[in-house]
Amino acid sequence: PQDGRISLRLSGRPIDFRVASHPTAYGENLVLRILDRQKGLVPINQLGLDESALSLLLSIIAKPEGIVLVTGPTGSGKTTTLYSILSHVNTESVNIMTLEDPVEYPIPLIRQSSVNEAAKLDFASGIRSLMRQDPDIILVGEIRDHPTAEMAFRAAMTGHQVYSTLHTNSAVGAIPRLLDIGILPDILAGNIIGVVAQRLIRVLCRHCKYPYQPDATERKLLGLHHNDEVTLYRAAGCDICHHQGYSGRQAIMEILKLDSELDDLISRRASMRDIKQAALEAGFRPLAQDGIRRILQGITSVAEVMRVVDLTDRH
Image 1 (cartoon, rainbow, N blue to C red):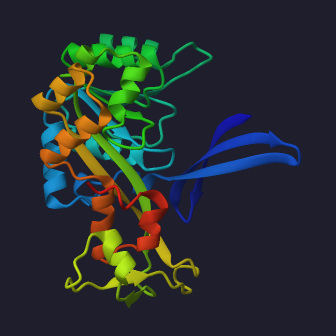
Image 2: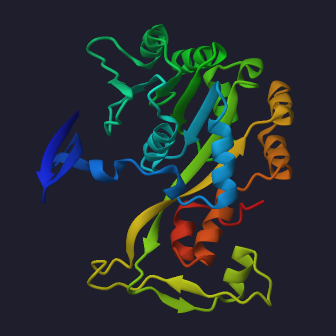
């Protein structure tokens, strides 16, 4: 297996490709990940968040210290969201340093670096080195193990703002995951200030999507009342979208802001169910609800959201 990078200019645009190969019985299997530098940095107000969700996210990243996590499966847009946040807080007076695997897009004024196994620079030792560089904000590409998590929390506890990613299916799921890694509940509580969980959904092609009225099954799935008048849309396919029915992608998100009540539950090792219930009572909106919002706005289809989210998990 090999990993590499290719940089090209296509139609005058700089395009990077991350290449991963794996040997199979019938030859090499190659996967290319396309990184368009011109589309890499998305303004935070263009992430697709509604006004209340954007306000919630801005209130989290306004805090001077603590850990903010972005969670989701591989290829769910976590790096794009993190880069968007960093671009928003990026000023000449703030020292932002990153440790990534690898650096995906260059960001002006930010000191970006990559882990290097050959030089024995992993995430844990890299964070230790970054903390000696007088940073205000640290981005750690991914928390994979206990040493990395321990150093990330140590950075947060010494007055730094830390951003990272974690592979969990939900925002609340980040809590038991970190406990499993070996972070003590008392360390966890009070140092995590927010968790964003997300998925990518395809956007319906505006040239060929067609309207229809939802049946009783879909109404129940979306939590609609029998007298709610709504129009939904399905994918069709045309020359413009190459007969895919979709063109472009957006992220759907759930944002968990940690407060004193949630910190207390974490310290007492409360169940994930109890933590989620307390979050819901405080206004937490699950992924399914954001997916339903995009469906009702005509941005995407029921089938597309169901591909990435359980629509029944909206409470």
